[in-house]
Image (cartoon, rainbow, N blue to C red; front, side):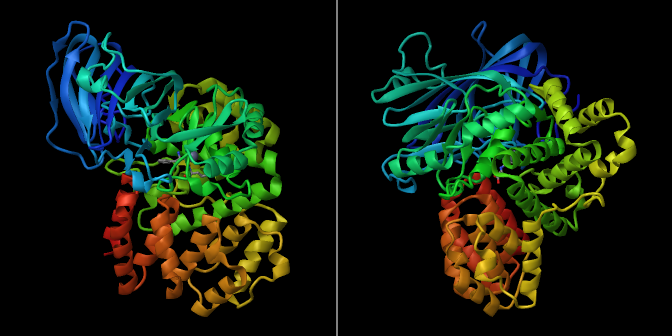
Length: 612
Ligand code: BES
Ligand code: ZN
């Protein structure tokens, strides 16, 4: 008996689930889902089986083959990270039907009231399961070691529609016969007037963190042969999204050329409300995106390139546990930049590498008292993955792969990547499996690249490097000159877009004279930028320089977006300030809290609690 993942109760001696059949009855009046989950194990089991749950109320556990109750217990102790294990006693059985109700505080779900939506008329709910939140929607072995196929019936009010990271089968009336409800709730509720059922099936096996749905007033536009963009049904939002993502099919083709066939059939996009806590989430067949990527200048393509790249690295080949998270994000960051380079050119790719480099350097400062999280291979026992989320797996992982590419040359590295993906697709692997494959396919690599230092060492290895590019060097040296009081001229910034400004701002010192901040903004209007990357980088500088005239913009920003990439640095800069800033941070959070996704609420709470 031993756990197979520091973030799951799943035991090494227990069979894994291969299929789940889900029925969900959405109750917007209570922000709960009355549900059932029929789990099928890869082989019959006798004895206790441990299943992950968080804030679920279990109403019954049944063996569906003979309709008998199965003995079960939900641990009264709640692990603050892993939740509550559900123990079910089995006698030579491989099927378990669990009925349960989710909690309004389910950590994966954000329930938006009608006033919190764009149209203000109807409610909206969506999921974010990575890394360990699927268990707050349904009982499961919530470890990426497991891969499941599933089908799902979503019973919703007829004014709404549902989307999933799965194939849509049909939208239909609830059936009164054939056990349509799957025991999720009473037949009378399931079949009540005004309800419809949306059915989905996922034929490709996925780790539980890739489970995803959204329910609301959702519309769509077609943008390519295998791509539609979905969003709240507002013509202006849908039009802007369709324009922003028009180049998606070109990127899929580049990905296929570099990494092999696209194995997920559809590549749809869903633009979520502004509270979505990430830039993007690689839910298979339907990527979830923050609306902040729609900037009107096609730059959202970088986030789409990243989530698309996960179709190969992350979704086809998955990290076994979060200790190996760099296998997902490091490979994907490398793959993203290859796609960006192919469609937008080397200079833009170099800018992205440079922004990433600065991010990596800054993380070394953040983790200076906890160097464990500057390693690629981490030990996350007792650690909440949301608390240690950082650029390290992305950028150090990228640097490692880029280092190997430099060693063996691009052609050989491309061939290696294709072979790696073909060898492990639809599998969950760990760092050692990757290293074994690398050594077997690139003989002698360990003599040229210090694999041990890269994987197990802390900090940034000495053979990591900044990008070589004229624009990159120019912008970084302009940022250094700002310290001496020189502002870039109109001519120098004439061709800059969001990413150039982002790189420039990120390379400025954390705090400068307040008068320099206002002078820069008077000239270039950065606090008014429609590009949140630029605006937030500027506001961070403003807070660091205690330029209080921008605090109203800071407050407005913290109240209009819930993307953690923006919340984290702004709240962190505030709590690192004087008493006044801390009180301000607390007040804004108490007013904005309800509008954030539960994951973002938790992350901001932990930032505030560390400093107050
Ligand atoms: N898979 C991540 C998002 C994630 C990571 C969610 C860990 C939960 C836990 C996604 O692919 C991602 O990296 N998104 C980035 C996009 C960026 C690198 C272009 C983001 O959200 O900023
Ligand atoms: Zn990613």
